[in-house]
Length: 127
Image (cartoon, rainbow, N blue to C red):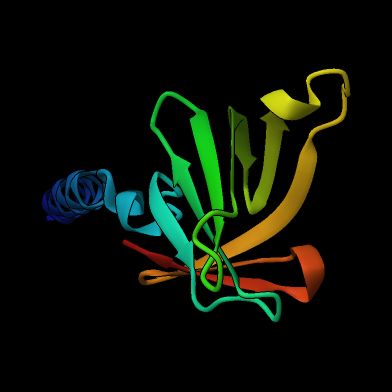
Protein backbone atom coordinates (compact mmCIF):
# COMPACT_ATOMS: atom_id res chain seq x y z
CA UNK A 1 0.00 0.00 0.00
CA UNK A 2 2.89 2.31 0.85
CA UNK A 3 4.42 1.71 -2.59
CA UNK A 4 1.09 2.50 -4.26
CA UNK A 5 0.82 5.88 -2.49
CA UNK A 6 4.43 6.69 -3.29
CA UNK A 7 3.91 5.79 -6.96
CA UNK A 8 0.68 7.82 -7.06
CA UNK A 9 2.47 10.78 -5.42
CA UNK A 10 5.27 10.62 -7.98
CA UNK A 11 2.75 10.55 -10.84
CA UNK A 12 0.93 13.61 -9.42
CA UNK A 13 4.27 15.47 -9.05
CA UNK A 14 5.26 14.59 -12.63
CA UNK A 15 1.92 15.83 -13.96
CA UNK A 16 2.17 19.08 -11.96
CA UNK A 17 5.70 19.68 -13.22
CA UNK A 18 4.64 19.08 -16.84
CA UNK A 19 1.72 21.52 -16.48
CA UNK A 20 3.98 24.10 -14.83
CA UNK A 21 6.54 23.97 -17.64
CA UNK A 22 3.82 24.19 -20.29
CA UNK A 23 2.40 27.30 -18.58
CA UNK A 24 5.79 29.04 -18.72
CA UNK A 25 5.94 29.44 -22.46
CA UNK A 26 6.42 32.88 -24.01
CA UNK A 27 4.15 34.77 -21.61
CA UNK A 28 6.79 37.51 -21.34
CA UNK A 29 5.97 38.80 -24.83
CA UNK A 30 3.36 41.09 -23.24
CA UNK A 31 6.10 42.70 -21.11
CA UNK A 32 8.04 44.05 -24.10
CA UNK A 33 8.39 47.81 -24.25
CA UNK A 34 6.37 49.57 -26.94
CA UNK A 35 8.28 50.13 -30.15
CA UNK A 36 9.62 53.57 -31.03
CA UNK A 37 9.34 52.71 -34.75
CA UNK A 38 6.93 55.02 -36.54
CA UNK A 39 6.24 58.68 -37.22
CA UNK A 40 5.96 60.96 -34.18
CA UNK A 41 4.85 64.60 -34.27
CA UNK A 42 5.04 67.16 -31.49
CA UNK A 43 1.75 67.58 -29.69
CA UNK A 44 1.69 71.33 -30.32
CA UNK A 45 3.84 74.11 -31.73
CA UNK A 46 6.42 75.64 -29.41
CA UNK A 47 6.30 79.32 -28.42
CA UNK A 48 8.09 80.29 -31.68
CA UNK A 49 5.50 78.45 -33.79
CA UNK A 50 7.66 75.42 -34.66
CA UNK A 51 6.37 71.87 -34.99
CA UNK A 52 8.63 68.81 -35.28
CA UNK A 53 8.28 65.33 -36.69
CA UNK A 54 10.55 62.34 -35.99
CA UNK A 55 10.50 59.17 -38.06
CA UNK A 56 12.11 56.02 -36.64
CA UNK A 57 12.51 53.05 -38.97
CA UNK A 58 13.07 49.41 -38.01
CA UNK A 59 16.53 49.46 -39.62
CA UNK A 60 17.61 52.01 -36.94
CA UNK A 61 17.66 54.98 -39.31
CA UNK A 62 15.72 58.11 -38.47
CA UNK A 63 14.80 61.50 -39.83
CA UNK A 64 13.70 64.80 -38.32
CA UNK A 65 11.70 67.60 -39.86
CA UNK A 66 10.85 70.94 -38.27
CA UNK A 67 8.70 73.69 -39.75
CA UNK A 68 7.32 77.02 -38.68
CA UNK A 69 3.53 77.05 -38.57
CA UNK A 70 3.58 80.88 -38.84
CA UNK A 71 5.93 81.01 -41.88
CA UNK A 72 5.74 77.97 -44.15
CA UNK A 73 9.05 78.94 -45.82
CA UNK A 74 10.99 78.13 -42.64
CA UNK A 75 11.78 74.41 -42.47
CA UNK A 76 14.71 72.23 -41.50
CA UNK A 77 15.47 68.51 -41.87
CA UNK A 78 18.12 66.02 -40.79
CA UNK A 79 18.74 62.28 -40.96
CA UNK A 80 20.70 59.90 -38.77
CA UNK A 81 20.88 56.59 -37.02
CA UNK A 82 19.58 55.68 -33.57
CA UNK A 83 19.85 53.08 -30.83
CA UNK A 84 17.40 52.31 -28.04
CA UNK A 85 18.65 50.80 -24.79
CA UNK A 86 15.81 50.41 -22.31
CA UNK A 87 14.31 53.90 -22.03
CA UNK A 88 17.44 55.63 -23.36
CA UNK A 89 17.43 56.95 -26.93
CA UNK A 90 20.72 57.85 -28.66
CA UNK A 91 20.72 59.57 -32.06
CA UNK A 92 23.72 60.32 -34.27
CA UNK A 93 22.55 63.10 -36.63
CA UNK A 94 24.31 63.46 -40.01
CA UNK A 95 24.49 67.25 -39.58
CA UNK A 96 26.62 66.65 -36.48
CA UNK A 97 28.84 64.01 -38.08
CA UNK A 98 31.97 65.74 -36.80
CA UNK A 99 30.85 65.01 -33.23
CA UNK A 100 31.37 61.56 -31.77
CA UNK A 101 28.81 61.92 -29.00
CA UNK A 102 25.18 61.28 -29.92
CA UNK A 103 22.16 63.28 -28.84
CA UNK A 104 20.83 61.33 -25.83
CA UNK A 105 17.52 61.53 -23.99
CA UNK A 106 15.21 59.26 -22.06
CA UNK A 107 11.72 58.47 -23.27
CA UNK A 108 8.53 56.75 -22.23
CA UNK A 109 5.65 55.56 -24.40
CA UNK A 110 2.06 55.27 -23.24
CA UNK A 111 -0.30 54.24 -26.02
CA UNK A 112 0.24 56.65 -28.92
CA UNK A 113 2.00 59.28 -26.76
CA UNK A 114 5.76 59.46 -26.27
CA UNK A 115 7.41 61.81 -23.79
CA UNK A 116 11.09 62.65 -24.24
CA UNK A 117 13.24 64.26 -21.57
CA UNK A 118 15.01 66.99 -23.56
CA UNK A 119 14.05 70.67 -23.07
CA UNK A 120 12.05 69.92 -19.94
CA UNK A 121 10.02 67.24 -21.70
CA UNK A 122 8.40 67.04 -25.12
CA UNK A 123 5.19 65.19 -25.85
CA UNK A 124 4.94 63.43 -29.21
CA UNK A 125 1.86 61.86 -30.84
CA UNK A 126 2.24 58.77 -33.06
CA UNK A 127 0.73 59.37 -36.50
